[in-house]
Length: 291
Image (cartoon, rainbow, N blue to C red; front, side, top):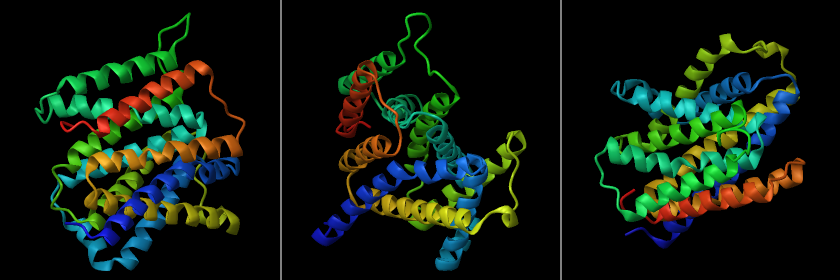
């Protein structure tokens, strides 16, 4: 049984991770305003994170290079999930991107049903229907199909799918340590960034082209990424998934407050309604034993 102190620290870890992901879009936007694209900024910040991790967790860091080839799937899919989320949150409306990302319970249910052969109960079916209704309401346009409006929203949707797929793969990776899984994610982001760089309109700035302030912002982002990943991995390890999922939705609260204070973005009544249905579906998914 988990001690009260460990339970409290695990809860703090999840809330802190949710806080980091709820505000991390803002320093990335600062970098983009400085002329550094989301791909370039992600590449530099994750290189910093991997470097710090290898230095601090030397033996564990090297162990990430000695894992079976199956870890490559986790790295690439998680890498795409993180990068697409960052690109979406930089260019899109913060709350719409967040809500689209939180369609991930829907994709988790579908993957679990068809891939893991887990039986979907009536509550699972209700979650799927409620999520789809919420998305339909959010995307509704009288003169077009109810689909994402722009590239950022498509990226957000794909990020939620990637997150769901990452969770399913992680279920088969219980033999991996928290540090190794974190390293795999960070290395995956670096690989995906390198693949995307040739297709970016903005050039890749050389390290010598960056100012001290820009390096400071990226170092701060890297620390937030490391802390969020390690704290969340610890929290998920020590708290039941159902409770962890509910706690991590604190990210939506943080993002809503941050976007209100730092931007002029607002949601319409229809978008709030659709978003509320998505959040309710996510909360139902968090208490659904079959997921």
